[in-house]
Image (cartoon, rainbow, N blue to C red; front, side):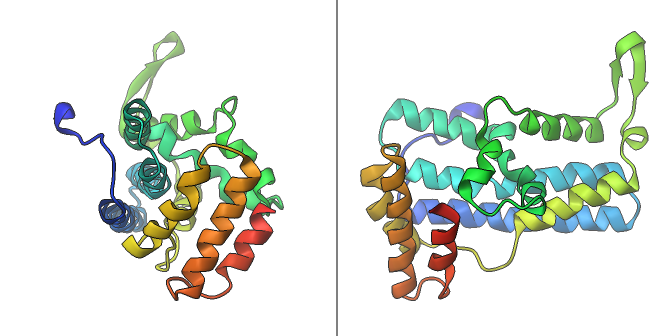
Length: 223
């Protein structure tokens, strides 16, 4: 199976297909998690909530893949696409927002390599799925680890991460603009990348590809 996994360049058309597949699947996983929670199957509700968070993290990685040409970099990005901890980096965003974060600089913890938040969520997913033995051979089973309050908190995060029905930079037309504006400055000067992102959103808004006002929110977030 692994040797059949795709790891080459993406066109805007194929990127849009992948992004929308992830969005559809993240919503389905969230629906299943809600169903399990309502039936008091809290440990599995947590596990599927985390899977929904991971699936919701795929679109941003796909947009990165879309900007790459180098085979080695492409291979690494596709590894990130399939790596659990690379897809859940933003799960702490709701907590950061609740503490007042409103600017990109206040979100740095999401990409901080010294932060263990990605491993924590992946570890919780393992505890919600499997039995295991810990220090002094103390056995753990999911139903003893996950309670209703924990399940509810992770489920609420998943709801935020899966988000509204309205998404941006998901259609082929939007992604063509994404490549047009971002590729020339990708992984170069940070200010130029921010400005390119704003220009991309501005053109998409002018063409009627996204709602009015989104660009202004992006400007406030980035600059």
